[in-house]
Length: 61
Image (tube, rainbow, N blue to C red; front, side, top):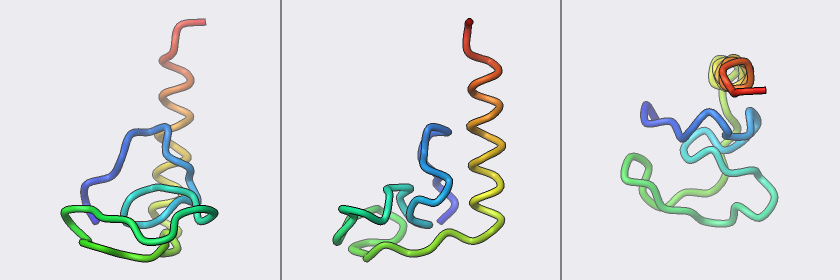
């Protein structure tokens, strides 16, 4: 669960892979193996939101 995808990940995406719930089905990751969508923890959601904001502020205008 420590290997998070890029900051462009949906803050409400799967706790394991970051994909949105809709259309997730079963996915494979090295850390979690085959898994169904798992609700992200509040900490993951907040971290992802902060990362997205930081990535937006770093992007050239």
